[in-house]
Figure 1: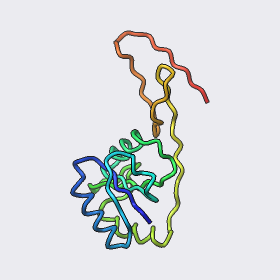
Figure 2: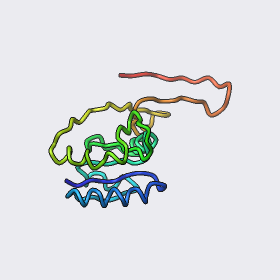
Figure 3: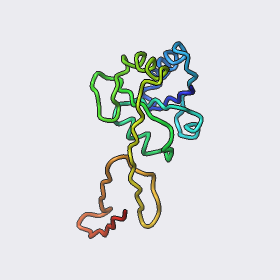
Figure 4: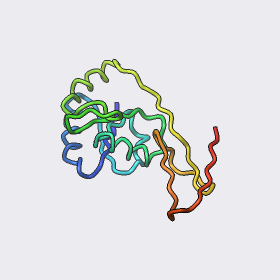
Length: 140
């Protein structure tokens, strides 16, 4: 299984540690900063907690590769559900295929008729100038 490691630059040292942990567990892995290599992965580990997961989904169109969000701190998030210290036990579960992949729908957004990257769970709409009227259309 090939595992891609994604995250912000502040997590590069952690990513190197995770790469070693993955290698020790028998996984092939690679680190990437842009999403050009995401299709090469069977699983993507995203660092940086919930913010890292949101940033990852904000910049990728890939909807097929499973994502495991990892928090480097000791606070569980909604999107990054495991702590870094728990990763080795989760890798054992992945090896045994003892997991469930949850499909999370994304919201398509158009601005001025142009598609943007799909968003994960919400969209904030602001005008570029205060006290300006806006028109928005919801389609299904």
